[in-house]
Image (tube, rainbow, N blue to C red; front, side, top):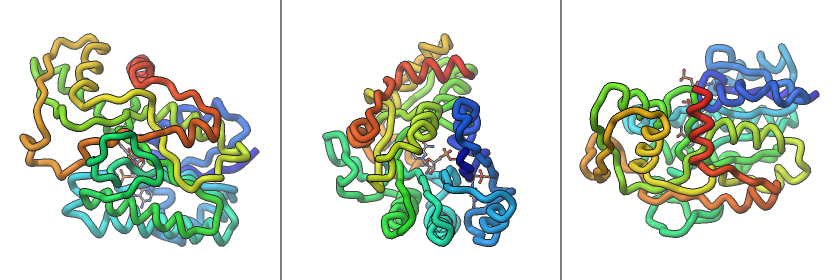
Length: 284
Ligand SMILES: NC(=O)c1ccc[n+]([C@@H]2O[C@H](COP(=O)([O-])OP(=O)(O)OC[C@H]3O[C@@H](n4cnc5c(N)ncnc54)[C@H](OP(=O)(O)O)[C@@H]3O)[C@@H](O)[C@H]2O)c1
């Protein structure tokens, strides 16, 4: 039995880990919320460790408010960069492994081919900048670690696009959704299962960066149409361009992640995003 700390347990991805934890009885997952353990406070980490020692950390804690980050730069940096540094220092000292999550937003979206892990990074907004700085911290770490970049995370939990579209389409006859950003939706439940299944795989930590997302790709517009079609709501979706929506900070136009590294290294067969969406809706 391996004791593994899961930080940010009340967040979207943290809840996905909680939902599948029972399927992996060989791992004793210790779920902690921000109130139990604040990653920006090293003393809080030590207190948690002294209470129940653990062999590794899955870091689901993050500042994830992409638009608000422009106004709360210090907060975003404190959690996404300095918080990660605290986790690294603690993991180095106590010889722990550390699994961390990052984002497709570290790319500028100007490429037109699927993005590999070594593709040049160029964040377009402060959230992405703070996440990239978190990755850099991990790259310099001497503990066993990896950063998993994911895109368009969705699940039955927390705040995400699928839940937003269902809520909107319950009350509106038509909605507008941007049609000039392409990416690969990531089902949090599939991601949590892949990690828990492979954490003891001898080659899991042989790369310090992976890309993971469900198979296939789409635009937000087509994603919304599929969500509404599968949920049976009667709402029409109209395409619009990102330029029409001045309330949001810039996001990459093309952020289709190439996931072949994780697929080949761990012999994964990743389900299609449409199949994942149907399973997500069944759970909701
Ligand atoms: N959502 C996406 O589409 C997406 C896409 C690509 C990558 N990612 C990455 O995937 C990971 C998980 O994202 P998510 O959607 O699950 O985020 P989330 O729902 O915002 O969850 C993050 C959790 O971390 C907690 N937290 C914040 N500050 C903390 C601190 N100092 N110490 C401990 N916990 C703290 C938050 O609590 P409060 O809410 O109370 O602050 C929240 O419960 C993140 O690394 C994110 O950058 C997400």
